[in-house]
Length: 133
Image (tube, rainbow, N blue to C red; front, side, top):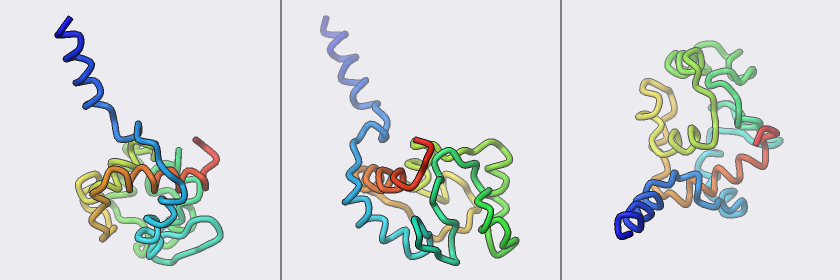
Protein backbone atom coordinates (compact mmCIF):
# COMPACT_ATOMS: atom_id res chain seq x y z
CA UNK A 1 0.00 0.00 0.00
CA UNK A 2 2.87 2.38 0.70
CA UNK A 3 4.14 1.83 -2.84
CA UNK A 4 0.72 2.77 -4.19
CA UNK A 5 0.80 6.04 -2.26
CA UNK A 6 4.37 6.68 -3.37
CA UNK A 7 3.36 6.03 -6.98
CA UNK A 8 0.57 8.57 -6.61
CA UNK A 9 3.03 11.17 -5.38
CA UNK A 10 5.27 10.58 -8.38
CA UNK A 11 2.27 10.78 -10.71
CA UNK A 12 1.39 14.20 -9.29
CA UNK A 13 4.98 15.40 -9.59
CA UNK A 14 5.16 14.17 -13.18
CA UNK A 15 1.97 15.96 -14.24
CA UNK A 16 2.72 18.14 -17.29
CA UNK A 17 2.65 21.92 -17.07
CA UNK A 18 -0.56 21.91 -19.13
CA UNK A 19 -2.34 20.64 -16.01
CA UNK A 20 -1.95 24.05 -14.36
CA UNK A 21 -4.99 26.24 -14.66
CA UNK A 22 -4.17 29.37 -16.62
CA UNK A 23 -5.76 32.73 -15.90
CA UNK A 24 -6.69 34.68 -19.02
CA UNK A 25 -6.46 38.11 -17.34
CA UNK A 26 -3.06 37.34 -15.85
CA UNK A 27 -2.00 35.90 -19.21
CA UNK A 28 -2.91 39.12 -20.96
CA UNK A 29 -0.54 40.98 -18.64
CA UNK A 30 2.29 38.48 -19.12
CA UNK A 31 1.65 38.48 -22.88
CA UNK A 32 2.81 42.09 -22.91
CA UNK A 33 6.34 40.62 -23.01
CA UNK A 34 5.38 38.60 -26.11
CA UNK A 35 3.40 41.48 -27.60
CA UNK A 36 6.58 43.45 -28.18
CA UNK A 37 7.04 41.28 -31.28
CA UNK A 38 3.85 39.23 -31.75
CA UNK A 39 0.45 40.49 -32.72
CA UNK A 40 -2.72 38.84 -31.49
CA UNK A 41 -6.35 39.72 -32.05
CA UNK A 42 -6.58 42.88 -34.14
CA UNK A 43 -3.02 43.94 -33.27
CA UNK A 44 -0.39 43.35 -35.93
CA UNK A 45 3.36 43.46 -35.35
CA UNK A 46 6.08 43.29 -38.02
CA UNK A 47 8.71 41.43 -35.99
CA UNK A 48 7.05 38.08 -35.21
CA UNK A 49 4.20 36.02 -36.61
CA UNK A 50 0.65 36.75 -35.54
CA UNK A 51 -0.54 34.30 -32.91
CA UNK A 52 -4.22 34.18 -33.85
CA UNK A 53 -5.18 30.51 -34.30
CA UNK A 54 -1.72 29.29 -33.38
CA UNK A 55 -3.18 26.27 -31.56
CA UNK A 56 -3.11 23.46 -34.09
CA UNK A 57 -0.97 25.39 -36.59
CA UNK A 58 2.10 23.79 -38.10
CA UNK A 59 5.26 25.68 -37.10
CA UNK A 60 6.59 28.12 -39.67
CA UNK A 61 3.38 28.39 -41.68
CA UNK A 62 1.58 31.62 -40.67
CA UNK A 63 0.91 32.99 -44.16
CA UNK A 64 1.75 36.69 -43.66
CA UNK A 65 4.99 35.94 -41.84
CA UNK A 66 5.97 33.17 -44.25
CA UNK A 67 5.47 35.62 -47.14
CA UNK A 68 8.25 37.81 -45.70
CA UNK A 69 10.85 35.32 -46.95
CA UNK A 70 14.19 35.66 -45.16
CA UNK A 71 12.78 38.50 -43.03
CA UNK A 72 10.17 36.10 -41.68
CA UNK A 73 10.66 32.63 -40.27
CA UNK A 74 14.08 31.15 -39.67
CA UNK A 75 15.13 28.09 -41.63
CA UNK A 76 15.03 26.21 -38.33
CA UNK A 77 11.36 27.08 -37.72
CA UNK A 78 10.36 26.15 -41.26
CA UNK A 79 12.28 22.87 -40.92
CA UNK A 80 10.54 22.16 -37.60
CA UNK A 81 7.18 22.56 -39.31
CA UNK A 82 8.26 20.38 -42.23
CA UNK A 83 9.28 17.75 -39.66
CA UNK A 84 5.79 17.81 -38.14
CA UNK A 85 5.99 20.42 -35.35
CA UNK A 86 2.40 21.44 -34.59
CA UNK A 87 1.61 24.00 -31.90
CA UNK A 88 -0.36 22.09 -29.28
CA UNK A 89 -0.78 23.31 -25.71
CA UNK A 90 2.16 21.21 -24.53
CA UNK A 91 4.36 22.25 -27.46
CA UNK A 92 3.68 25.94 -26.84
CA UNK A 93 4.42 25.54 -23.13
CA UNK A 94 7.70 23.82 -23.93
CA UNK A 95 8.62 26.46 -26.51
CA UNK A 96 7.90 29.48 -24.31
CA UNK A 97 9.96 27.89 -21.52
CA UNK A 98 13.12 28.03 -23.64
CA UNK A 99 12.63 28.82 -27.34
CA UNK A 100 16.27 28.22 -28.30
CA UNK A 101 16.28 24.81 -26.62
CA UNK A 102 12.99 23.73 -28.19
CA UNK A 103 13.91 24.81 -31.74
CA UNK A 104 17.65 25.52 -31.98
CA UNK A 105 18.47 28.14 -34.59
CA UNK A 106 15.12 29.94 -34.46
CA UNK A 107 15.18 33.74 -34.67
CA UNK A 108 13.22 34.48 -31.50
CA UNK A 109 15.48 36.47 -29.18
CA UNK A 110 13.15 36.06 -26.18
CA UNK A 111 14.79 33.88 -23.50
CA UNK A 112 11.54 32.31 -22.31
CA UNK A 113 9.20 32.50 -19.34
CA UNK A 114 10.78 30.82 -16.32
CA UNK A 115 7.63 30.73 -14.17
CA UNK A 116 5.31 27.80 -14.83
CA UNK A 117 2.23 29.82 -13.85
CA UNK A 118 3.15 32.63 -16.26
CA UNK A 119 3.39 30.08 -19.07
CA UNK A 120 0.00 28.58 -18.16
CA UNK A 121 -1.52 32.07 -18.03
CA UNK A 122 -0.08 33.10 -21.41
CA UNK A 123 -1.36 29.87 -22.95
CA UNK A 124 -4.84 30.54 -21.55
CA UNK A 125 -4.75 34.03 -23.09
CA UNK A 126 -3.48 32.81 -26.47
CA UNK A 127 -6.20 30.16 -26.55
CA UNK A 128 -8.86 32.87 -26.47
CA UNK A 129 -7.63 33.79 -29.99
CA UNK A 130 -7.64 30.24 -31.35
CA UNK A 131 -10.57 28.34 -32.80
CA UNK A 132 -8.85 24.96 -32.28
CA UNK A 133 -8.78 24.18 -28.58
